[in-house]
Image (cartoon, rainbow, N blue to C red; front, top):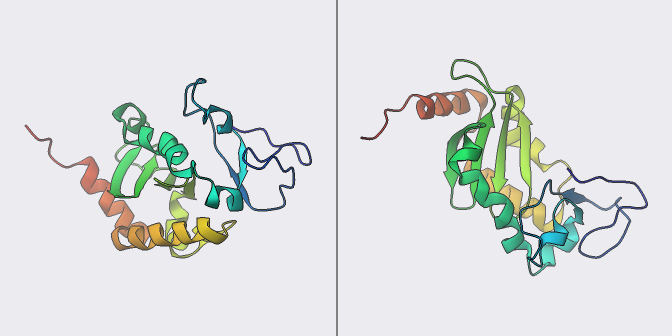
Length: 170
């Protein structure tokens, strides 16, 4: 997880230390040290800087792609996905409610995270908290699709149950 120290930690893109501007921070490294994008991992980035950064999509894919990997999915359930997003929840035994639900975007290095029991309000509007500009537009677009699949907690719960108990293909 990125270590943020007010007035000292800088945006990995512009180098500015004014973190009163909306920003996000990735956690961990998604790229090998030889990759030019390695230095941007585990660091804060202003949303405004990310919006126009030419490496945003490739950088974002580095954090998004592993969530489609079975070894990562073993830590949570994967009830739905679209072209530009993944809806996950976990951790929990099949008979229990998960602790969280989250949506990961393919072209922004962020996750939209909600406690499980707060999903209905989160999906409706709370996901927007702290987002501005292009990041908010991207989240709005993705969440409009996610709401088609899981608009409320009851629908999300049913979707998860169908995913957990679907028959295996031979």
